[in-house]
Amino acid sequence: MGKKQNKRRKVKDFAKVRLKVGKKLKKPTSTDTNFKTKKVVLVDQLSTSANICVSHRGLTLDELCRQLGHYNLNVRKDAIIGVRQLLSSHPELIPRHLCLLIPAVGRLIADDKMDTVSYAQLRALLLLLCTSSSRVISAHFALFMAHTLRALSHLKLSVRAFATSVLTVLMNSYPELCINCGDLFDAFLTMFAGNRKPSNKQLLVDALLAFLNVFCKQPSPRHEGPLHVATFSIESARVTRINLTPRPHLFGSSLFDSSHQLQKTAVLRVRQQNLPTEFETEFEKTIETLLVLAKRGNLPKKLHDSIDSLRLTK
Image (cartoon, rainbow, N blue to C red; front, side):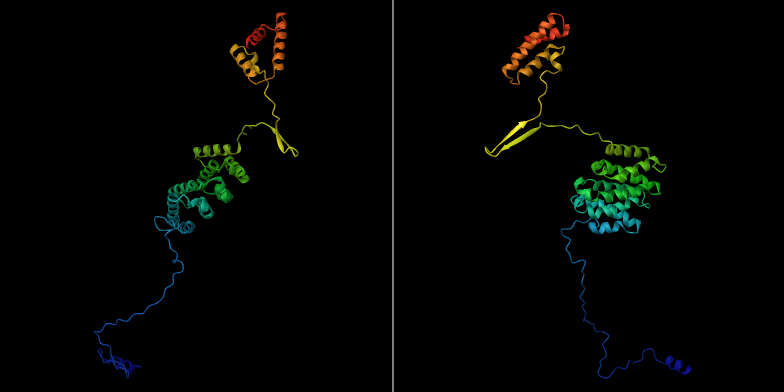
């Protein structure tokens, strides 16, 4: 072992390199100009992004929605801001991508690691989603409400308070969809009657008013139109329309009103209905009969004056 180490030490530092037979030594001043190429295939980046809407960071809506579920809190915050900015600039994307937005945004309602600023950004994003019509969002409303009710029973108070504000927005925006949600009624009453409700009284009042507006609506008055029946004759090929709606009574309460002007108006209204002459004759006979009864003292004086005014109204 010692002899070999001594031989290695005796090797000179700048010893001449022995070349193999048939090879030439490269000159130290020469420059190698040869180069090699290699083909690189980018499968995911071949699509052109000329017609794709992107955020201020150059991210598409699909990429931002994937970042909404990222494990890093800062990435989720930036994704919320990016989605809000993108949807504010291009509101036409909302109805077309609700199937992507509702699951991604809905799961953030129960996120207990978010701060006040993030909740404000998320609330603004939810308000943008609620600009969709009831017809468009109806297919995704059950999932949206499920995420909200799940956050309403969260252990953390800040999450329950934020879920209450989101629920108020949903009830104010889509009352016709909320009334068909059976879980909403039970969950809201359980939250409101328990000891775990948020301490913000204004928030509770707004939520209660929205809840009453959904579930305590008075039925609107029915406006019934005229009732018609149509009869069809095959022989004459004609359709006869018959109005079955009864006419209002000719003699209303204004006919015997204390005001003579109202009495005249009522009589003129009766005469303008193009009634037959037989009715006019019967009407005069009735007035004469009432006058006879009034002269005999069988009618009160108030009716006597009214009958006189009817007789003079021609």
